Length: 211
Image 1 (cartoon, rainbow, N blue to C red):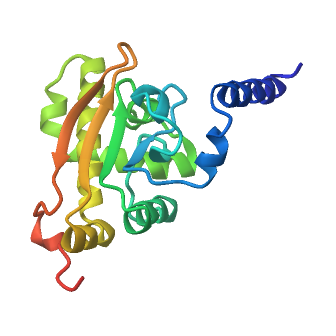
Image 2 (image 1 turned 120 degrees about the vertical axis):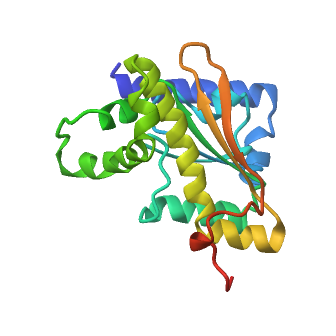
């Protein structure tokens, strides 16, 4: 059996296990999607949102990319954010990074990863530049990387707050709260590192006055 065929077989066994326990499980799930959370996480295969939060399908709306970035020219990210906030009415948006992130490690080097990855990683390099004094004072490379992971998560949460999508929901519906978390690959524990309550004021330069 080929490796991808194993996935298909495991899917059948998983689905059967669900219906054996609850014959109406998939029928109910197909008719309902009312998640309270939008999860913006890293594409890393070791950080599956539902599994590490012990939640069920339908509870978390998920977007993932390399190093959990919120880039304002990323139409994919913005469309997910708009749908989750404006239509699903989520109450919380979580940016979750993870210690030991390969994207963050790559951004800390001067290696040429070719055009597309270079373009993406440059956004993380910008975060390093903003916090260069603090990061350069951390002698241990692993600890420096972990701190950049935390700072990157904080920066991406702030990028969320700069969008008209979030600001409009804050103004009209006093939601969602924004959260920055970091997951530990070595212990499986999520570390909350940053939070912005709905309506938090940011630099006036980024606040829209005609929403």
